[in-house]
Image 1 (cartoon, rainbow, N blue to C red):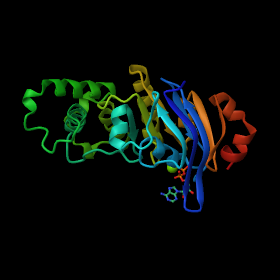
Image 2: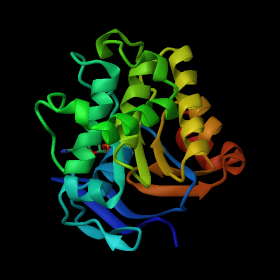
Image 3: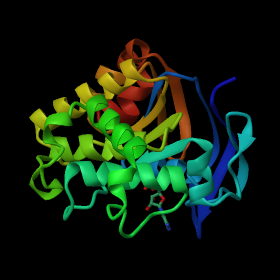
Image 4: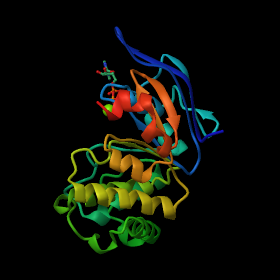
Amino acid sequence: MGILEVKGVGKRFGGLQALSDVNLSVAENTVHAIIGPNGAGKSTLLNCFVGKLIPDTGSVMFNGESVLGRKPHEINQMGISRVFQTPEIFTDLTVMENVMISCFAHRDGAFRLHPFETVAHETDIIEQAEKMLLDVNMADKRNMHAASLSRGDKRRLEMAMCLAQEPRLLLLDEPTAGMARADTNNTIDLLKEIKEKRDITMAIIEHDMHVVFSLAERITVLAQGTPLVEDTPENIKGHPKVKEAYLGE
Ligand code: ADP
Ligand code: MG
């Protein structure tokens, strides 16, 4: 059984059947990509995993427990973290301060408005934040202002903040959208590095086939709200249905 098991998921928006009968199994410690044309339902599906949407039918099980009906922060505490298309960081703060906020939030279960007042005593938080920055190769940028980072480094910082929550499943919705090639490659390297350093599962929605084929071990192709095929990258590349529905679009 996969760490994420999706069975018979359907979601309707008014007259539009955005998802129908979606079955998907994401194996633990793998990178599983979900691809498909615009409007195929990829983001809607992801939103059903994190409690942003509740499907009309079907089940979503994470680590043997249902996520349906739970609030986004509860699902986050279960071990699912999501990375946004635009990195969600505090641009007024330094790199280190950003990561510390996330470490505090994970430890205390709440955000603190002034996390740095007592910081001299919080050696555990400082150590933890330093480790997260090492994991994303940003230790040398700890005192930089987050606003001045490149797009790739903003993504790295967001990832460090995500890792502070100790997720077992990381969900990424088009993490390289709008990036130049250098930042895209930086992000591919980052995800590979994290995968090497941690026991973590990734489900990634991605348009850029270079990213998909660099990272994914399994690929599900979604078309018109339902999985068309699920296979290894090698088989997906040559699949006639996939070429027709997606790669050839
Ligand atoms: P993808 O991420 O694959 O591009 P989406 O999941 O964003 O596709 O959208 C799937 C379909 O559902 C699209 O036709 C989109 O317009 C529609 N849709 C998505 N979210 C909503 C919503 N909140 N209300 C109405 N329609 C929506
Ligand atoms: Mg989308």
